[in-house]
Length: 391
Image 1 (cartoon, one colour):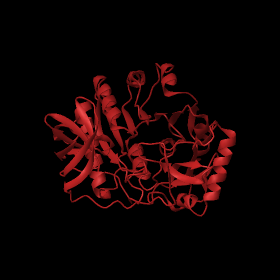
Image 2 (cartoon, helix red, strand yellow; image 1 turned 90 degrees about the horizontal axis):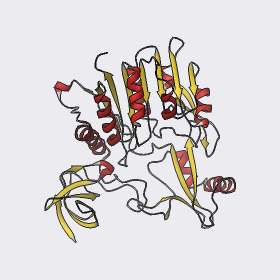
Image 3 (cartoon, one colour; image 1 turned 60 degrees about the horizontal axis):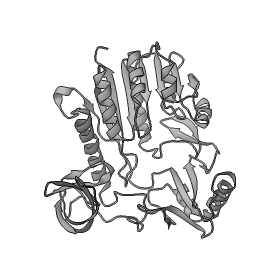
């Protein structure tokens, strides 16, 4: 059934929100202020999901998607909006989640929260880290389709950097060889199964496995490979590093979920005691190469904090997975009574939940910045400074 809907705003995952006869409807492919005809694709009782069939009144922010695979490939979901509008909408989503879930009004002058401008850069050709999918039998390579496990064969992706795009085109045989190596060494047992090949573009070389490549970030050289996490947008990453560096205070620093030491590299020094906690052994191997004044603990944050009841800490840095912080981790951090917590988040819903938990323990959000590291997608990162009220 087609519905005529007025789109109020965007919500997480980039869907437009509309209401029809008292029911909330999430509309894929719509923008705020638009009037659309949409077809319901899923009814969940108290809400529905729908897809745009026709744009009746278009937003001035609407553009023609630049990629011919848009809507078929599952990689991008925001190409129908200008890059500038995407950044504005993502900031609004983060702020609304903080208000709705965390009870934190970042725009209220009485709250005293410093809100920095959205950090963004070029909208295309920025991505340096990706997972390709390869079908060796069909000699195809690309990405999974939208809401499917079908392979979309792609020769050029406009959000990838040049060196990764070459793997889809003239260097495709190299990508196939990497897939063959993974097929032999890993758990790709099913014949015809698609093979994932992670790729990470360093400054000079591309890593397709454990080959280490160098990356310059804000004047420092860091080492990574395709099998570990490293932010895929090096144009915006320096702004995130600056936020963390500028809000770390004191001499004793704990970096939970430290990865390869991206943040620790900018806060460590001979006059500071910095601890990096990371469960991934490969990340720690690279972190040891990236850092020179940091103590390492190869454990999960959840396990490590249980053994640190009397630790004296000035600042805690956390960059957890999408699920956010375990309540026990928050309790442990609060028991250390740090002056501040710098929280980097890839999911503003769990960030808002965790900020509320910190508030219940006597902490308050004092600063916020949103980072549009992944233009053309609905993904958004953010960071907050959480300070102890009596510090």
